[in-house]
Length: 309
Length: 322
Image (cartoon, rainbow over all chains, first blue to last red; front, side, top):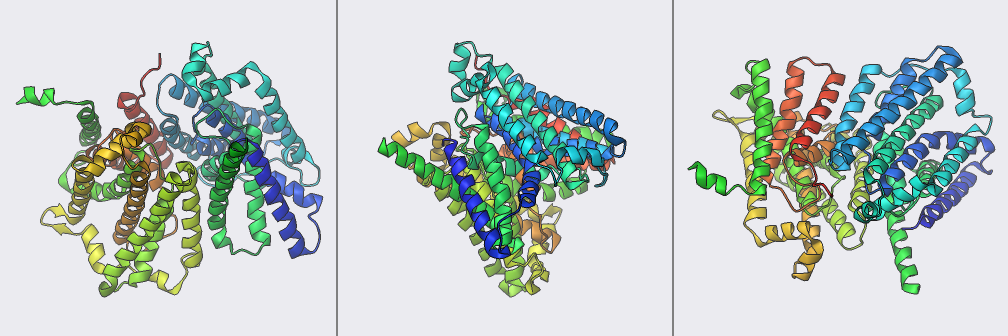
């Protein structure tokens, strides 16, 4: 499925959001609404971007839940030291994510254990470490950090989203970006033409870890507190975002931009359901249907286009 | 005696042997550091807990054998658990219809999964993840967050006694599990359907060309997977007496872990339920041992993950490409 599907889904959910918001409140969403939406969406956008890199190589990363949890735990447990200390701890969080991701990549590439199994096992390990760092939910975040990362009054979130998109656009054009697609399309062929497949795999898992760590930083900045289990919900939602964004599970097709669009769509759907007055208890029913229908429509359009050409 | 046995060691039986050896190793290690760990009393308790994993893993294994996966397990399980109590209202005379209703829910979700995967071409991950959401929404919504008047009901007593009861020294739950194991093993090993399952799992294209109704086989497997998830839900709620929300959450990853630790290839086509039984016991034995050693929760998570990794390194590796 091409990434166009991801944009189409995003456009559709955004239209639905405008309609239900306006009909229920009587005016168009304000810039404050958009910014808080973006702030809420940023952690999922980041995790989904990392997840899409892994899926592009034909793998999957279930340990994002543990890596986000570990990052959140470190951020929350070390809060209260002012801006300089916070920046130092953010660096530690990013290093931890990179380390966890590299470990995943090494086990997958060198250990030859299926990605789903590797990351299932490391999910347990990283979640355990998160519990060790922060046994009970709590902590806070320095106001300076919050002002820079997720200021609800300034369009900082837009800037960060732009950076993520720009990062992907650059990455895709590098040799590494080409290799990610090569490994995902046909690993044997990629090896035959000299692509260091193992190194590429280690790198995508490491990047996924880094993205999860960044997501943790933004999560704490948005919610202003930490929960060692905060990452759990991102496992399945990041996979859903990747799927809605039109990235193929077989690898080699799709783009991180699609996954980012998917993540934004999934966040919008929650608001659409809220403003449409749907009982929150039924929320996951509609999210599940949304997921299946989005993929079905994507598949159908693809088949139509193939038939037409 | 040993000679002919060795000659018959195929890669398949070796996989079962590895899984049984892993379970044996954990139990032996437990017996050494914690006297009484491998006693019959302690084993009995572990078998009951392992059987719940064994039931969900039976369903998970069936779809993994054809290279699929079922992520809808948690809320099919949870939904079935709620249906059993709300339909029976704790009354023994409504037990039959309650169990049937719960199994029917599982079958319906499984059927939807199978149709979506086989006929609509939706990837298994997406279809089953979506259906998990649908079941979560329905379970929460219809039971009003488990606050409905009938949600306070308990399971009928005979069901509770079936799971916790004993027949002489043997837990009745073990007999139920043996029945499930017999069903799955006979289905996969001695029927045409079973041979078709392995054929589809090994090479769907070749199976199709050989005249195997690939789509039909896939739909039946997903339906059975839903039924087994519901079965686990019935067993689990019978054990605890009342349903709770999130009851099924741990069972998604546990079912996959049990299947793989049981020597089933995640790529499909290889594996037997005997190994999965051993895998389920292994997982429960690890957790029980860590609890008996009073390892704190974080340590349990870390060690559990590392032990599974170690097991995968021993016999779960893929072939090298070069």
